Length: 211
Image (tube, rainbow, N blue to C red; front, side, top):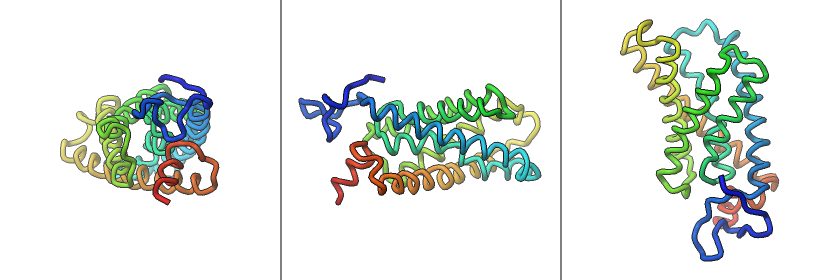
C-alpha cells in the first residue's frame, strides 16, 4: 500500500500526469480502518447469532446466512476504491471479530484473508474502476464461494457431507454473498456518502461526476 498526503493527492484520484493513482491518502487509511472496525463488530454480533439463534439451521441451509461476513471486503473498497481495500477491509474486520471473542478462533483470520482476496480479484480484474451493484454482488458471490471451499477443508465437509450438499451450500452462499454482502454494502455506502461524511473519497468523487 503506497501512501500519499492529502496535500499532494489529486481530488479526482489521478496523478499529475493524468493517470490513475493506486496510492492511498492518509484520510483513506483512517476511513478504511474505522469502517473495518465497525464491520468487525457486525461480524462478531452476527457470529453470536449464528451460534445461538441460527444454530438449529442445518448444513447446507446455514450458508444462506453467511453473506454478512463478506461486507468488510465489499463496503471498504466501495468507499475507498483503491487496490488492496477488499483484503484490508475483510482482514481487519475478521481480526476485530476474533479479538471480541469468536468461537472459531484464529481460523477467522484465514477466512477473512481468503474472502478478501476473492473479492479483491473481481475489483482488480476491472482495474479498480467499476463498483456498480452487479460488480459488488459478483465480488460478494465469489467471496462466499471461496469461504465454503475453505470451510470444507477446515471443517472436513468433504468427509461429512455429500458433494451435492456442498454444491448446494456453494450456491446458497453465492446468493447470500451477493445479497447480504453486495447489496447491503452498496446501500450502506450510499447512505454514508449521502451524509457528506465521505467527501473526497472514491465513492463521493463518482457521485459528484454523475450529479
